[in-house]
Image (cartoon, rainbow, N blue to C red; front, side, top):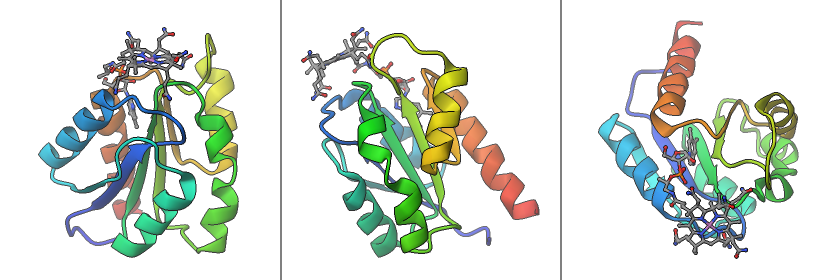
Length: 141
Ligand code: B12
């Protein structure tokens, strides 16, 4: 991986219309030097994948607040291999379950769906710091 400006596709998955964090994510990614393609709220997994392919993105960063992401993201592993997206980093964060749920239960589940990084009820800056460390790690490997 080169050190060119990284492209990120982002948005809020499925029937979720919580927009505030999405705006913050857009602003924060731009402030960190990423080129951002923000698909906004109410975006379906297939639309995210189309945008990743069209923009040749390095990262897909999905947000979910209403807790229903699990139902919308189950096909990720299949789409990743179907479109040969193994070099794209897949990230999801926000409220990743309906009601109370423990990180230790949630994270492995979303990783099995094909996400590289999973942030359940983790604040944005901590998540983005972890993403940057992860990207840096890939460059040095
Ligand atoms: C405002 C709001 C609404 C507004 C949204 C308006 C809009 N257009 O945005 C309205 C009233 C429309 C609404 C509707 C609903 N809402 Co609402 N809503 C909220 C509320 C009060 C604030 C959300 C918000 O904007 N916060 C500000 C942002 C900046 O903070 P944040 O959400 O915590 O985001 C941070 C992190 O989550 C994180 N983050 C987010 N995404 C990502 C991604 C990554 C990669 C990383 C690292 C971090 C990250 O970063 C953000 C900044 O640190 C929350 C409760 C609350 N106090 O949080 C409920 C809440 C999110 N809503 C909830 C629910 C259930 C609903 C409804 C289903 C209610 C209903 N029965 O109709 C609907 C869903 C509609 C839909 N189709 O999505 C629940 C979700 C519960 C769950 N997951 O179990 C919450 C938590 C309320 C609750 N305690 O029950 N809602």
